[in-house]
Structure formats: structure tokens, C-alpha cells
Length: 118
Image 1 (tube, one colour):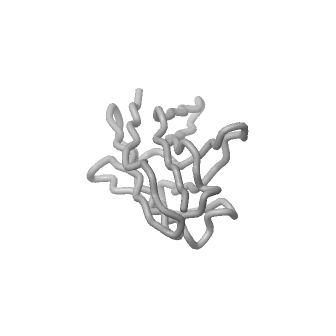
Image 2: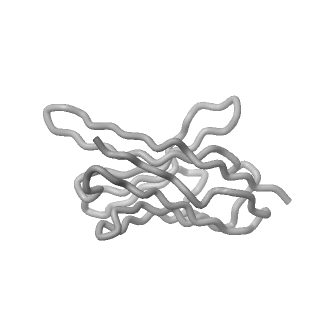
Image 3: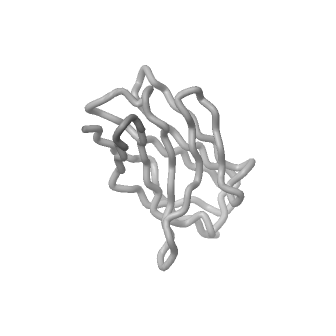
């Protein structure tokens, strides 16, 4: 069982930056596809970014070119560097770890709030 704990959320001004971290315990993130999702009030949870075990990355259209996902397997930590923040980036951000064999292993963190305003 993998436990995920997000940190680094808070308030940022429009155009500012924040860096989110997701610390994992109970298993190595190196074997998981890791992702960041977000959910704004009244909206569905959406995929922000994904990084595979081979370090291939993919981003949602709304964050392309502004956010960067990375992983430090030695520290067992996932990161999301967010730049040029916009008010529409305001949401709770969740860390996800997914691993598929004959069974799907799917773990979530508790979320961290990001608020962007001018």
C-alpha cells in the first residue's frame, strides 16, 4: 500500500509560481506511472500531467508550457512546478500513483489547495 502526501500548495498571485511535492511511502514510485490531477469547485477532476516509469511526460492542454512534472526516485517524491499561474488554475491538486499488472494498483493523496488571484 502506497501512501501519498502532497505539500506546497497555497496562495499565489496571477503570473506567479508554486512548486507542489508529493512524498510517497510504503513502496517505490519508480514502478508507478505518476500523475497530478486537479479539481476546481463544481467541476470534474481533470488530469494535469503524467510522467511514466521511463520519464515520458504528458500535459493537459490548459497547462502545456507552464507546468512541469518531474520525479525523484531516490527521494521517492513527485513534483509539479507551476509557472505563469492563472486564476483558473485554482483547484485542489491531487497526486496519483498507478501500476498495472494482472491487477490495477491506484493510489491517491489527500490533495493540496492552490489558489491564484490578482
